[in-house]
Image (cartoon, rainbow, N blue to C red; front, side, top):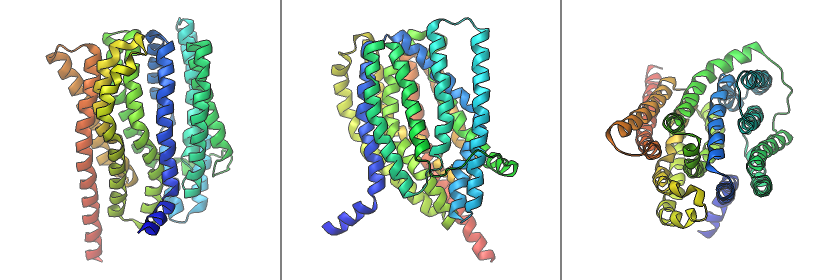
Length: 427
């Protein structure tokens, strides 16, 4: 029995390594967040949080080309079409360079036409730098597919964990400017490491036929993921509309907790997405894809759920070290209840792999309806504060989307299985 278990662990060595990097990143991210909250005023964190909304909207320029590559490249490799896969990578690379030029033009126009103070200008410059670097990061990361690739990717994550801790020292020296420098340097290092270990060493080369194929596949995937990311900004926009930068800054600890919870499912999703696409391209079996997805749900739930209760009672002790953010305590405790339902972020993964555009639409619509309905209901029918409304609307939305996602995923698999059986019968 022991030997069998040992062989099983050896077979799962890479995914264990990937998960280990996530587990190690969590305490480091929290430590850096604690340093940030200790030394930076809520107003400045509110300004930066506003810039992250801009970063989300700037992803529109990708037009789904990277999304198309993330799906079609491993699928092409699964069907043995190596040349087509390389063409997808080259075209995506070329298009990303074009998008980079456009985003810098837009940023220049914004800074030229609006009177902004030095804090906002510094945030915009760093934000634009991160956006353009992330264009390249998402492209290269999407080309990692094999077990060996992911082994290298996990090594990169370990380096980034150490660098994150080291770069946080800039906060002690330069305060908020040091925080901005840390954000830019961390993103730059990620881009450099991914470039050095990229599995597809190709030059940018635009191919119109490949572009059309990527656009057709990627646009529905992009629209769904982009709209979900826009929906996620609604609580922030609500705070800005009915509050101010300082209130948005007080919401920062909540965003830190949500980000920490999201780390594991995001890591699992990034690991399994190309593998699921490859497996579907090779086997064309939706049931096997569903079985793999259920494992992702189960592992994430087993890891996240035990954190909730201890976290609730530890937070009052933790917030004592950050007196500037003491008003954030009840919000942080409420944010813990998102934990068990954070897997709702993976709810559309199966639909994307199976290219079920209509069900992708259902997922997005549910996200939007639940988020808007919950925030408006709490605003109109309760006496909660602006910040309380923002967090509890997210808890409600996550819970409802989580339950609906499971039902939708199962429905998709059942439909595809029935369709495959009908084809066999007709033959």
